[in-house]
Length: 119
Image (cartoon, rainbow, N blue to C red; front, top):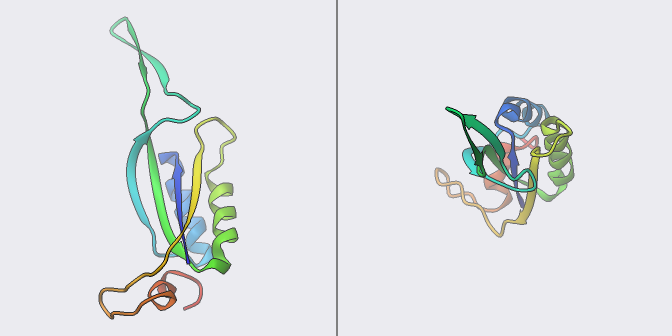
């Protein structure tokens, strides 16, 4: 199993969520975050004074999927979150050793399957 974390523009959240839903990935976690990367913030003028905002608002999406779905999920997130401009975000993939569904006690892949096209 893999955990896919995508940090994207807030305005792209609905598009990414809908695209993942069409792929059959329904279980996800969304967090509002702030951060910086190559974009390095932007400059604004407030009451005649110029200042730089270094940390920009982003959204982090987390999904756990079976290994066989990883490439498709990455492709769908990349395509639906892309604007072609600096600041589109990043996708991180890490290995998940185990998952436990609290309600039933199911572990491993069985705990993850309800969030994928398998069911």
